[in-house]
Amino acid sequence: METIGNGNGGTVRTRHVAVFAFPFASHPTHLLNLVRRLAAAAPTVLFSFFSTERTNRALFTKRGCDNILRYDVSDGIPEGYVMQGKIHEDINYFLGVAKEEFKSGVQVAEKEVGMKMSCLVSDAFLWFSADLAKELNIPWVALRTGGARSLSTHLYTDLIREKYSELKGSIGPNDEIANLIPGVESIRLADLPIGVIFGDLDSPFASMMHKMGRNLTRATTVAINSFQELDPDVTKNLSSLFNNFLNIGPSNLVSKHNSPSKPDEFSCISWLDNQNPGSVAYISFGTKFCPPPNELVAIAEALESTKTPFLWSINKDSQTHLPLGFVERTTANGSGKVVPWAPQVQVLDHIATGVFVTHGGWNSVLESIGSGVPMICRPLIGDQPINSWMVERVWGIGVWIEGGKFTKHETCCALEQVLSVDASSKGMKERIGVLKDLAHKAVGPNGSSTQNFKTLVDVITR
Ligand SMILES: *[C@@H]1O[C@H](CO)[C@@H](O)[C@H](O)[C@H]1NC(C)=O
Ligand SMILES: *[C@@H]1O[C@H](CO)[C@@H](O)[C@H](O)[C@H]1NC(C)=O
Ligand SMILES: *[C@@H]1O[C@H](CO)[C@@H](O)[C@H](O)[C@H]1NC(C)=O
Image 1 (cartoon, rainbow, N blue to C red):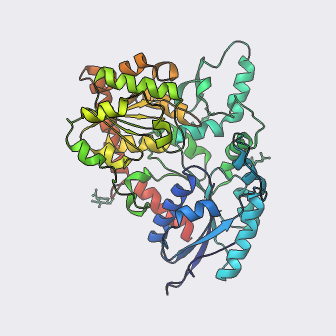
Image 2: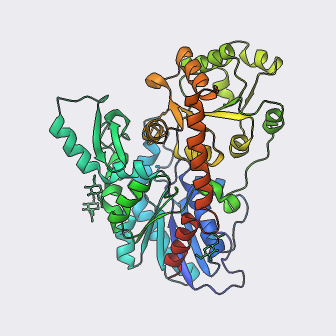
Image 3: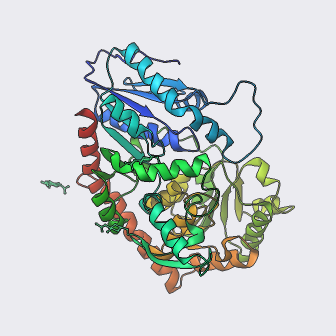
């Protein structure tokens, strides 16, 4: 256990809040961004932020806020153990020790700071926080980093499983079921997050999601990175289920407290400045996941054959899978730019960007909405399929690549569909423009998310 800073910049501290991160993917970043926002709004509250050494090291590069302390907890991986590359191996090790690690961490922090915890804020995944908060006799605030619809699939997992076993034999993964979960008129079973009805339901990960779904109603408050105007029906349903359901996003639009974005070292923006408005396909699947090599080839072939200007953010290793001469040709004729990293929000906000080719991760969807850029989705894991379903079928602000995988033909069709100037593309742009306005309004001075955030501040300072 290690701390930095003394949490005492001369301010009198009235409350001590424990924060538990789920130390994988972008979860800790989002949680810390929220804590930074809370810390700025409630300067008399001291936050003790618990995560693994590896993630904390990346997050706390500089000394953060005066009132956020860093605490490291074990990742549960036995000393000298070499990862076997099994799915969720690191997550499983962590979950094996998480509850005890957080629990003893809280005792250390309380002793060092000289103040008992008054509130527990955690990633919603960490369902056992309900028990810890109860033991400590303090409120539990759960933060959900994904969307409301995918959350409802975890809340209604038992219901979905029941329905599925009733229908067993008569339906397959590619069948749709109507009105299974609130706000989703129909859903294809195969698009439910893994662990709801498909996959290894007894894996530690699936079991964590199931327990989250069962225990989340015990939270004093459930905060979510979304805005209620995006999903009014689900918001209504979840509000009836939770004590206090607060849409406080999109967090990308309240970026003041987010960790600073890296500079545009590959000059993406000046390249975009020379492109026609709405003409460029921006392609990025984030830093962690990537479609298989044959699909990268299909995208490249489609871009060249449709002569679509493109900005493609793809890491160096994956770049080796692109067709021979592709990068050189498109760089030379000025039609494209391949970079290992791009400042995504600025790229999406740029007038030249016409479509975002994405995996449909929640953050990417919110960023696309925040900039009003329609999407071509190729979901890879987790909640990406249900998000992509929403993008295409419910909100009508993009397309899910036909067949679920990039082929040259389907990629050409999707690019033409979104980038053309016909009615279908116009409708898409209009609809995402409406959502963009609602998103900005929600985080504006009198917006719903702004009000909800104030309520959240009240909860943690109470
Ligand atoms: C919380 O999750 C545990 C583990 O699945 C379960 O036994 C318990 O019933 C849940 N609590 C509530 C209130 O449902
Ligand atoms: C919420 O959705 C569930 C599952 O569809 C349903 O049983 C329940 O009645 C809904 N609640 C409200 C208040 O609409
Ligand atoms: C915000 O709401 C308050 C009270 O509800 C109102 O007086 C004020 O004019 C509103 N401001 C804006 C910018 O809408």
